[in-house]
Length: 255
Ligand SMILES: Cc1cc2nc3c(=O)[nH]c(=O)nc-3n(C[C@H](O)[C@H](O)[C@H](O)COP(=O)(O)O)c2cc1C
View: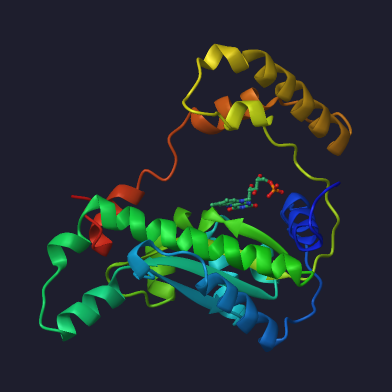
C-alpha cells in the first residue's frame, strides 16, 4: 500500500482483512472492551440523530443456547463469548414523544421510519464489528435469528416497535479462515449512473471462476459452486416469509 497515510493504512488493512469467524476460544472479553465496542457502535451516523436502535448483549449461557437453537442451531451463537442482538427501535422515540404529550404513531408506522431504524441498527452494528476486529476479536453476523423472530423477541423481552434485525457473535478467534473473494469493483462501483449490465457480464463470469476456485481449494474439491450457482440456490425459494406479518405484529405496519 503506497501513498497511504499511516492511520489510513491501519484502518484499510483492518477493513480489507475482514472474514467472518465461527470458531472461538473460551476466553471472555473484558468489560472495558465491550464498552469501547458499544461506544464505537453509538458513534455511527444516525438519521436525524434519532438513534433508532438498541443492542442487547447476551452472555447468559442458557439464553445463548436458546438463541443458537432459534437461529437454526448455529452452535457458534452458544460458543461465542458475547452475543449482540441489534434491534431496530422506535419504542424509545414513541416513549419520549408521548412523554411530551405528542402522539407520533402515524409517523412511526411509515415504511420510511422502518428503513431509518433498520439502517441505524446496521450502521451501529458495522461500527461494532470493525471496533471488535480492531481489538483482535472475531465476529460473524447472525441473520439466522430472523428464523424465529417471535421467540427471540419474547426471550429478550423486546417491547412493541422493537424488532431484532440480526445478531453478532463476538469472541477471540480459534480459526484462521481464508477470505471470501468479493465481486470485482467494476460490478459494484459505477460512476455517474448505472451502466448497461451487459458491460460487466465478462467480469461476472471471471468472478464466478474465482469463487469456484475458492471453494475447490477450501473444500478439497467437494464444492465447486460459482457465485451465480450460489445465488440461484439461495434465491430459488423465498426465505423468512413470516417477516411481513411479524413486523406488522411488532408495530411496523409499513404504511
Ligand atoms: C446481515 C447478515 C446476516 C448474516 N447471517 C449469518 C448467519 O446467520 N450465519 C452465518 O454463519 N453467517 C451469517 N452472515 C455472514 C455471511 O455469511 C458472510 O459475511 C458472507 O458470507 C461473507 O463472508 P465473510 O464475512 O467471511 O467475508 C451474515 C452476514 C450478514 C451481513
